[in-house]
Length: 228
Image 1: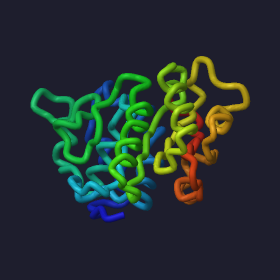
Image 2: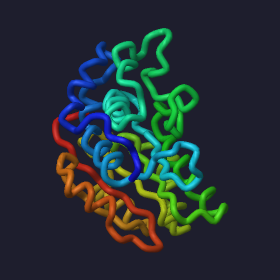
Image 3: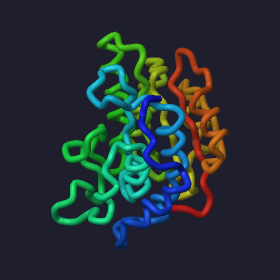
């Protein structure tokens, strides 16, 4: 991991507080903040942004991106002064992240169910280019897994053994349909390695993200109670 720390984890609430308005979806943002921090602080290699061997992070859970913006600012990837004007007319920080406007953002997101299929495509592209170093991380919400496109992506990734792909599911019990046996079981039966951890426990998250899973994609289910 090669990012430059501008602020520590303790400063994230203050950075998030700079963004105001109902559009912030504060609870949705709060559900992701610990996962995002561990990924950017301890796991991923995300700079320089044009390095073809960088890790890729895809925020599929794109609504409520305040925590994402705060973490980018804390890691020196985004000017903190932009936070106060977020979602404004002249701000690059929209209600959903835009890859064209924000350096380091890999996809424009917000529409449910798109991030995981895109992540599968990115992982396949890296494999086709014989790039074995980068990992692809996709952060999704449990409600997104109701979308049929995700079921197809889960099945394909497992069968192709996309072991550079890691999906992080924020499980706050917001799914309409759910899955018999739980979220991890849904992935396991399709050939994925799985881990279910407390989504607030940084050491548990790190252990999940760095678990061995040779020849298989990995899903880490981060359980978060009380956030939507």
